Image 1: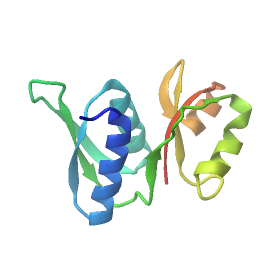
Image 2: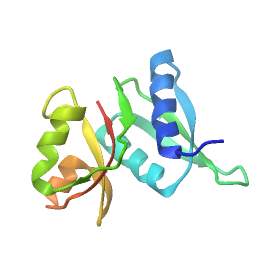
Image 3: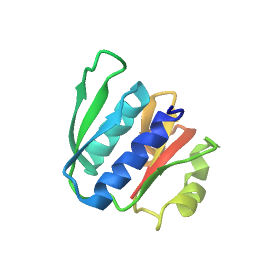
Image 4: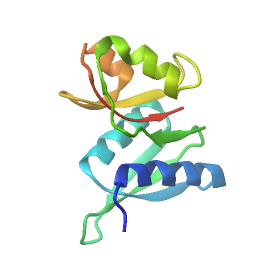
Length: 128
């Protein structure tokens, strides 16, 4: 039984990238859909589509071979606008390399987009 679909999604993406497959199937949710949109916009994955299985659905994700590491951040830390740099130092290999995913009042976005919109939020995951 799966309890954390976001963690499952990051694990599946990381394992698929490590093995070198060209696509994978990940669980579906609204948060996962928004994170996949952000990953696609930043160039980490290719296209993705919803597969309706009569239950919750799943996403088929095309890989492009640009993920070195990705993961979920637990516990979910509340982060202010000025403290993104500290979290970059903690989870990313270098400042300016990779993305932190943040749930803000304006939706799920990368930490760079949240900084441009001058919004804080809750950390969900990272990728580089």
